[in-house]
Image (cartoon, rainbow, N blue to C red; front, side, top):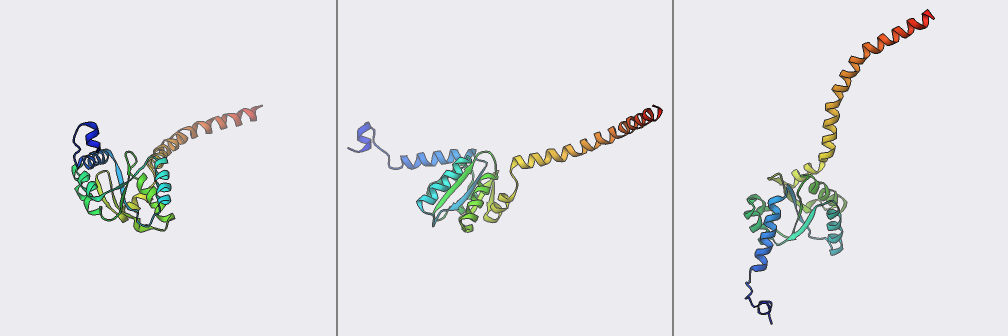
Length: 183
C-alpha cells in the first residue's frame, strides 16, 4: 500500500515540496540575516560539526535544494537571493543578530581554509556579496557596540563630574591644611 492509500486520501506529488517551500518561506520571512554557502568538499562529519557549532550559537544551517529555495525566496520577497542559489547550497540563518551568521561562517571558512565557501548573503533585507559578508563578519557584535557606545556616552559625564568636584576637593584640602597649621 502506498502512503496515500493508508490514510484514505490520495497523495499529491508536490505536497512534500510545497511544505518545504512554505516552511522555508516562513523562515526567510522572519530572519534578520543569512549567509549563502557552498558546502562542496565538506564531509558528512564536517557538516555535522559545523551544524552543531552553529546550532550552539542559535544559527540554523539548512542544506537546501536550489529550486525550492528560489521559490521560497521569491515568495518571501527576496528576489535578489536567487542569483546566489547555484550548486550545492546551504543557508546559515539567524533571527536576531545580523552579523552572527557572517562571523561564524567567516570563522569556519578561515579555519577550514575555504574562503570560497561563502557566496553571499542578506542582512536586514539587503543583498550582500561574499566580500560584504566578510566585512560584516569583521564588525563587532551588537553587545560590544552597545558597550562601546555606553562608554563613549559615559566618559563626558564622568569628566564633568570630576570638574565639578575639583573645586570642592581643593577647598576641603585648603581647610584641612589651615586646620593643621592652626593646631
